[in-house]
Image (tube, rainbow, N blue to C red; front, side, top):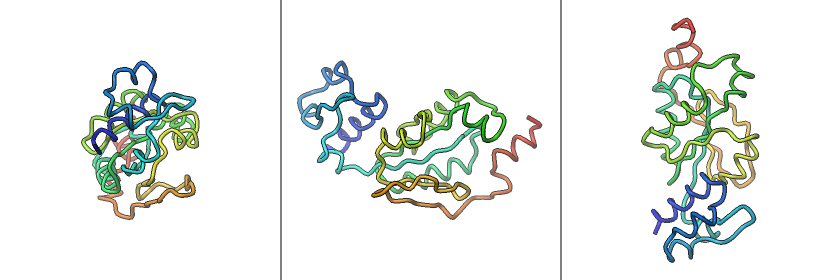
Length: 177
């Protein structure tokens, strides 16, 4: 049952509400776990309470062991790990340049074992929260906990592998990019 709920939750977040077309392809047991909402079908509150959703995020421009470590640690806090990957626009604003396009970065992150779903950053962090509805938000050791919604557990990782070796900005400088 839990695996079915996880599958339906991931469909719901991926599609921003399960479409009528997708709903029609589900079996009766799966349909019984959903209810019609304005933006498509959603898990019932009872179904949603059976899973713990963890969210984390970042740029993931040059994927390194620090990222993998953070994702593995984040996954330990729940059943499903959703990763919000920053858009190209946001990275250019904050860091000036990037190496890989947002679609490439999202696909790389989604291929990692602990990640159940990688979402490209939505128009605002609040919209991403609204879509994912996490139970837990995990921040890496070097991230500020800028989102602290009521009722959501915040985990700030304290440990890092080696901050001098595992910083994307350092790797970019060393590669001369």
